Image 1 (tube, rainbow, N blue to C red):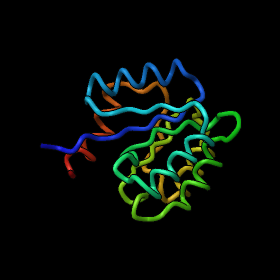
Image 2 (image 1 turned 90 degrees about the horizontal axis):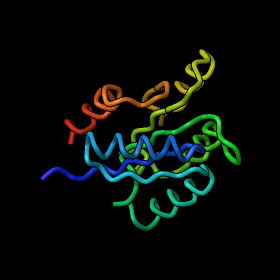
Image 3 (image 1 turned 180 degrees about the vertical axis):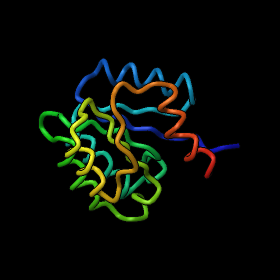
Image 4 (image 1 turned 90 degrees about the vertical axis):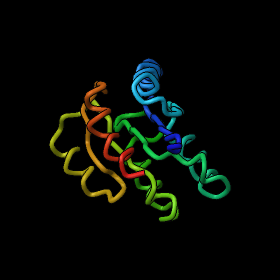
Length: 136
């Protein structure tokens, strides 16, 4: 039986998180955790990396523009986690930004797999997640 995928959403808009959670669970049936505060999410990821890597997400959808800690600040800290957990996690920037500078900046982070414009759709999900599912 295939391992259940853990998906993590980080977006300061709770409505966006709710819609994306429903979209992911309906189309893929994966476990979804949604956070509105990137700093709190980072603390949770550090804890999982240290003690319970089974809860560490396989996929993270990360917004850029958020209060407290934006997506870029999150990525800078996230990349400091052990390679053992980072290597099994796929990060997708999911943002309303279409700024070419943001797209280029996302490519400078080794942990970012792709840059995706909102909204998340079933077709975008399948395009992003099917290669990950078929590898496992």
